[in-house]
Image (tube, rainbow, N blue to C red):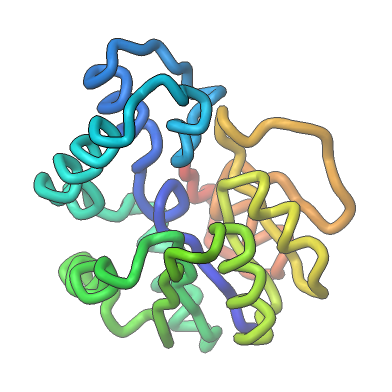
Length: 202
């Protein structure tokens, strides 16, 4: 199979840390249920200069590269690779993140696990980028955590797994399978066996 894998909040925790940093910086109290990488749309009163300064601070701190890939996610990726599936990282990270992301993935011991890494162009939304990438790569399945993106992906002929997170709640949709664990994704739905225990993300 050809499987697309998101990075942030699929392989590594990211959005909760982003929201915590946002709340601390701007004195807000955004709950995880309302977490969003585009959070500034909700707070138009925050001036553009302050927004840019916040992003520069995160970039300077290496925000996207501070945390390791979750062990259970890494184990699932290795298992899929060993079974001969083609894996592709399809991320909302931007072009200037590509090289450091590849270095970060290699440092996690997964440098040979993925056939390619597709980053987002600034002109595209994340959902459009991932839908276009999934079509280009002719993916059979996609593992995602953002609901808007998953809703765009289900318009393609592929299996979409939405990892259950506080920020992606909502009604079920045809073609969208909500799962809590890598074990649920691959053992149950793709016919792969991870052994007696489930491999949990949450």
